[in-house]
Image (cartoon, rainbow, N blue to C red; front, side, top):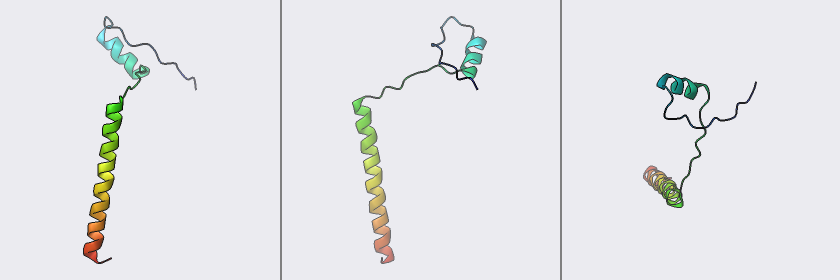
Length: 66
């Protein structure tokens, strides 16, 4: 199996059917850039989710008498 290198982004002047066909055959490489603010927001959301899960689990165990 041959590994293809990512191609450069499709030009805006390309015909629509060619752009669609090329996107299906070999996707262009688009690096994801997430800033420190987004990293902090994701970390805060994960922390809040973990804390709430722990509180709910503890409450359920308290109700069950464990």
